[in-house]
Image 1 (cartoon, chains in turn red, purple):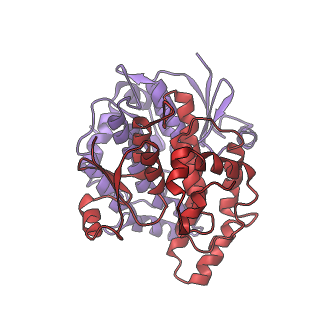
Image 2: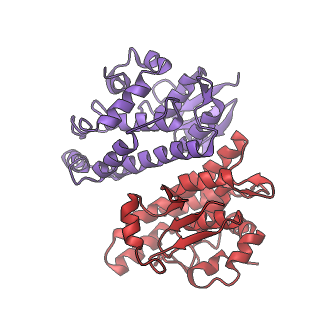
Image 3: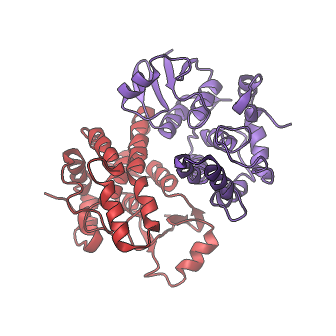
Length: 216
Length: 216
């Protein structure tokens, strides 16, 4: 089997969907972070990539969602690839990824706010009734009224990036009840969290990864 | 053949890659814009989608890049689908799309600047030697040092979104020489522009679409 190495910060963020895909595929990989890899920053610089990037037998692949789509074609679960072969099913998977990106994107500019109180207020505002993220969480909740029984990279991506908005998270300032009212999103959370390899992977999770365990 | 209808503004932007993919596929479609469709805004509202969206026999598909990936699997050119079947070739196509998105994204916030002089200055700054778009144009130019002989939706996406940064464009304030120094990007431009169905489509183009014609 080829040797896989992932390079990402020691957070969930954009690296976690790749970690979960590899885990579902039963593919061993070295999970390099600045905490366990002394020359992490040198390797990041040498790659010419933003993190996360993946190396397969030393060949570097950048762009988190491109990596995920690649793995989705290579990895099967229950006999089906994580990226659907049927083009309309693949569309639904891509559309879930893109909608999740729409939901995530308003958080980006808040990372540049230096004042802590101001940053937390700006983030809380995104989840207010008229907030920029609320608009897309509502769309995502509608989208997840139904979902397939075969897990896709779209499901994995939505699961991870929604969890980034759940307390406890490394994105400080998000209200603890921000996601409470989204019944479909929370039902979908448990669909992914209860997949046996995912549940096994997070069964002893602590800190920001407790939100990756099933709710019920 | 199913009936295709596209809904988008009368600009190039995120709709043009879909128009080109359909054109390359020889698929007739109704190109609805507010200029030719009196109830455009009502139909947009009813769809629940952002533009562009596509309807196929009345079924609505949103998310521009998801639509493009779908069409890429359905449409062949020279016997090959526009979205490659091989997973590593598909990765390269996806990575080109994601890199193009990185290049495009800094322009987004400038659309909110109300003062015209301030907006144009902010845009020009993105293309300065230390500009946010310059960084990604350099990466894109490296990426396009080589590209395949079979056109992909990645090629189409890069071609269209780079052209959005070329004068004349609907994005005012971008310096006229902003792309002059990127030899690989400009070589890639002509690769796409000279594909017979693309060249035929734009042969009488005027205004913001003159940049879609071959340079040489």
